[in-house]
Image (cartoon, rainbow, N blue to C red):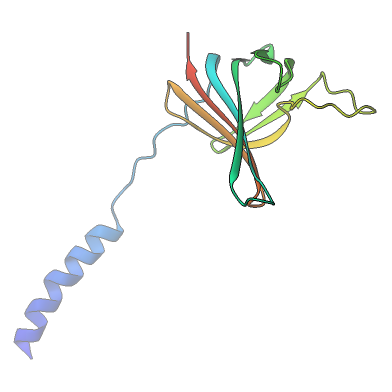
Length: 142
């Protein structure tokens, strides 16, 4: 019985030490500044069941005081501006250029998106079911 206890005590000590470890969380780095890169609209073609992707080169400016502004290739994506809010996981954009009564053929940066930011690379994504996603793959330029 003592032999079994000798193996159990070190195992319990390691288990308790592992459970009581104090983990330091990294502070959230909120994106601000000017970012440049690509906007991608990825859609599954219902006929061929293959992905259709369209791209546009954009510039996104984020400022805590003035909001956001999208410029660049506006053939697919609308140039726009408005306010935004950020937490550790999501960004919400409120586009002030959307004209509600009329339908626009261009995409607007509007609504809630998931994002990842490491200080230089900003990836913003919105996915709708398994067939459509909007992706912004941007790099900080200043």
